[in-house]
Length: 405
Ligand code: GLA
Image (cartoon, rainbow, N blue to C red; front, top):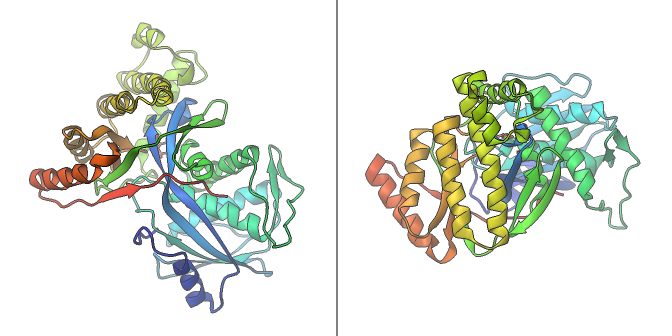
């Protein structure tokens, strides 16, 4: 997806639609990107993780069709992508459309009926920054279909559709149903796109709450919120593109899963550090490192939730720094660029915590900064980063927002 300026109006997506299809789109949907605040690679280990939905969005302008065709156009790519609903196949020339197709395939699998549509896609989520433009596109697609061809989702699939009100609006998704949407979107990414990701990104895009952190329990698939008020959230993009389709992410997941298996556990969520250490010899060195990271990271998230409840943001920030060190030294998914950004951030007194966010191997760092020192902190980062690397760097200041609905 392209990265347009952060606060460009929603009219842009309408403009893209009108330019391509020649008429004004009747409907708009949008879904936010996310930042992982604490809990690196814990989600697919059935662990706990904390995130926020942020004010960078995928927007979709949509209109129904009756001929069973779907035509997608994106402001980032010159060619549109047209396909029949009956043949949803990957097109290597338009990999961006895979996220849409994956969701449509999952909707059909669950018995949702729809007859085709036109859609324009627009985004201001920086691509490759690790802010989950792909999950936002999946969520926006599922909501687009709901808007055009109303349906409800349950554990077993599509059920009685919701009723529109007198203005034609659908009721917002209930909490339980939102989780079914998140699962469907994750399945799209796992099965169609082929990325073995966990559920963090999809849940974050759907469960955001302004000024609040989302606490996700990935074993029980439950969510609650905790206020995080008074600090700024600032992102630095290392400029190294992160793409989860690469093999590194899958390699980490495999090591975690084989470690759990060898320890006789359903997942690393069930493993205590003491047990892990006792059985170190049963694991390969790489399995041990990955497991060590995950087991310690889950403990950090639990401690972090407590620190936030106590409004001890400095303590919370310490867990963020410790998380980065564990990702860097044990999981080994950091990069020199990300390490430099965290080390420079750490030197500024206004910085409460900093760490890599998301899959790693590139992407961004997330920084929790005392609000009144944010300007000075950004100046410090720009100056010292340029002095150290010779490169300029632009901070991305994020607001915590409502999830998609
Ligand atoms: C990516 C994946 C998530 C999660 C994070 C790492 O963002 O999509 O499911 O595993 O990496 O915590």
